Length: 374
Ligand SMILES: [Zn+2]
Image (spheres, rainbow, N blue to C red):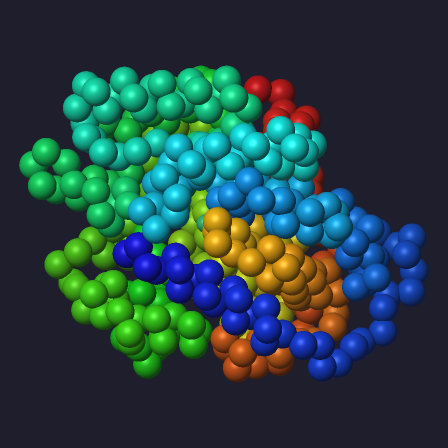
């Protein structure tokens, strides 16, 4: 599973070079109208928040580009062997947060090593307390829970494992949100020819060991979704953020039903924009309605990653390209070509008030508890 996230990142980088505007529709003229939309000229001016990035070095290129493009960032630590160690990710996050505390926020994580032992329980407790004391806004549980980690009996540890319930309650009690990445894109359980995006098709063709369609003995897509839903239901006061559109990216109606069912849940858009665009090309109004109906529950995010060896100028270019391509799609009516789905995609031209929530207010409410009573 580990290389899968790299594939997602590669896909983002591909998107960054593949999107070029091919047509422009007239801007909405009446800026005072409540459904007025932004233009590309508004991009740098409007306050924005990328709620899912990985700034895995104290080098400031990513943070500097965020400042230039008017973004706050939530950098998320992950229990992921390809990334620097959890300790090094935390050190980078703390250094960046110290350098620009108003712009750089972070989410902590904990190791699954020794899962279920008394030592593990106490080290996770210490990690959650340290995160809260050091200013983290959330704790991340990655897809190694559900797909990789085993318990003492050799069984996969799923998110609703009893040993994880006290962790969730500790996270909640310390005022933190919990970011959950469980499962994989729906495409992972389909044969190659039925996958909806080229990046998924290419990745799973080259990595059959990760292609769950070929491994019917492993938990099914629906198993993962049911486990996650049980977990969210069991912790109704926990602010839960389903990373990557809660792995329900393939169907905005089903994702909407998830949000309707769980008022304590939000979702981020990280690394799944092509899946949204795939649906948008087929029925733009359906996707537009989803964003408007659930405008309080959707957080903009990219999964942009700065590794310790990422060349600083390349990081800045990539971040700016991804951010402007996404703004073009969500905020304007402009059309751009998206290579991953081989289509020209018309922008959703979401109303300004909706863009302000998805791009800023929701993240500040969910993570910084702005305007929250509890
Ligand atoms: Zn991520």
